[in-house]
Image (cartoon, rainbow, N blue to C red; front, side, top):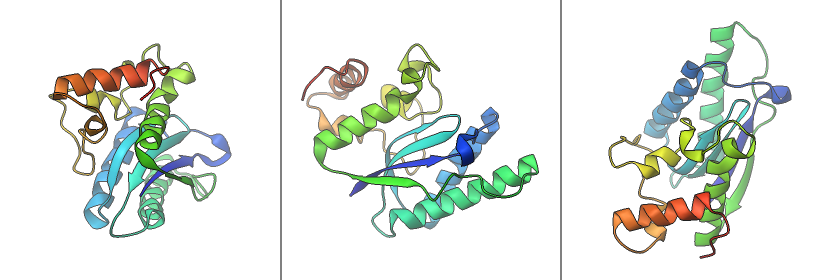
Length: 175
């Protein structure tokens, strides 16, 4: 089962102060996946929080998130010479049911930077999985299958990409 997980900075303060912080969290996600395998269907790293559409077959999502958040908090506190809590609380998680639920949550995750005015096009935001779905050439991390959402649509790979774009960027599309 997939879960929509959100981890937020303590007091809604930034979790990512520069590009290296975003890259570090992506590295941590990769490292944790080697220890506790999981799959991401979508992700988006915002300034003060991040969203994951995640499932883990071997361990609980709580175990995965505990490792991710602990490692990132250690990195953040060491880098910036801070002490105390980095995250607001444990994390929010909600089960995501069925094809429509997965597609809707993925769209919500990918549209986050656009909704808050960080970008004028969802394609511009570099810290989400959306560019991976759109590209034939971008390499995906081991824990991320960039065909995951595409398999919900019929046709060739290019037709699937076009349908995903239509579904994500024109939310009135009904499946």
